[in-house]
Image (cartoon, rainbow, N blue to C red):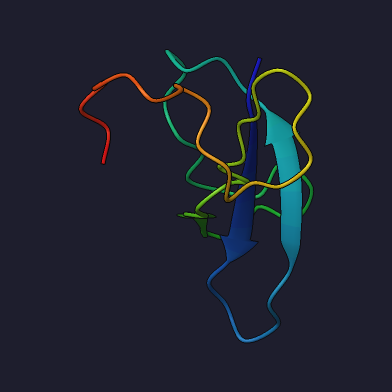
Length: 69
């Protein structure tokens, strides 16, 4: 189940994380304070490594024409 980050939209900002199903509707209010919230969009980590290679700049599909570059 993914973890989403929310932030209150009032004067005193508060960020919190909550586990939600991807099918759940986004929260509209902080469960603790009742203040309105918005979901914080982040880019995530985006790091995928294949074969235990330590350098993320190495290409892992070999010399074949995979079409990814």
